[in-house]
Amino acid sequence: MTSQLNWQTVEDDPNNVDRALKTMKDFFATGQTKSYQFRVDQLNAFKRGVQEMTAELSEALTKDLGRSDFINKILEINSIVSDIDHTLANLQKWMQDEPVDTPSLLAPAKCYIRREPLGVIAIMGSWNFPLFTSIHIMVSALAAGNCVLVKPSEMSVNSAHVIHKLITKYMHSKAVICVNGAVQTAIRLTSSKFD
Image 1 (cartoon, rainbow, N blue to C red):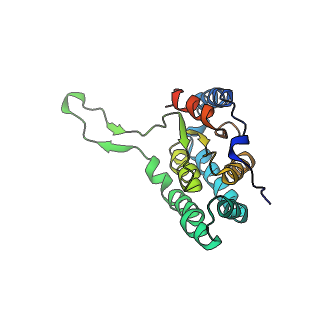
Image 2: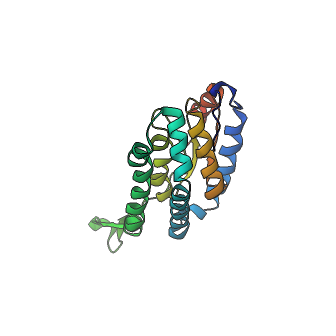
Image 3: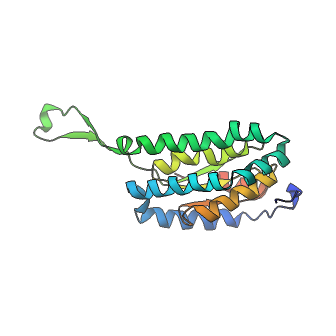
């Protein structure tokens, strides 16, 4: 059971952003996140985590926002699982090179569009839809082969702690990192160079 905390007592160490960013940039440089299998593994782990932690996620949302369990599941939790399922069903097709017309001057070459991940993506969640704006967006970022730094809102402290637990327990420790904090952490995050 998650305990109610005062958001102002959350550790606010902006150096956590620097450490996480370095870790993820180094990991992205290995090229592991680009493979189809790595992306599928991360999405499946994410789905498993959301499903296994549904009760905790809903309880945190209720404590933070006063919403009912039904609303929590409909508005935020189930939509994440549905988006992951849709992404998994289409990911292989989305990753395929797209052939395009080749100018005659380049013949006999072949031209195509290859979609490449950008690198490390930052996501800052809002207080009023903490799961939807913090971790739901991770689905697309992971499917694209990026590393993700998530900073949930300190105003929804129970949700922030459960999001941190979910990411720490289920996601690759160098590909997805959750950094909790308040104002100084947010300032460092927005002033850091992400891809």
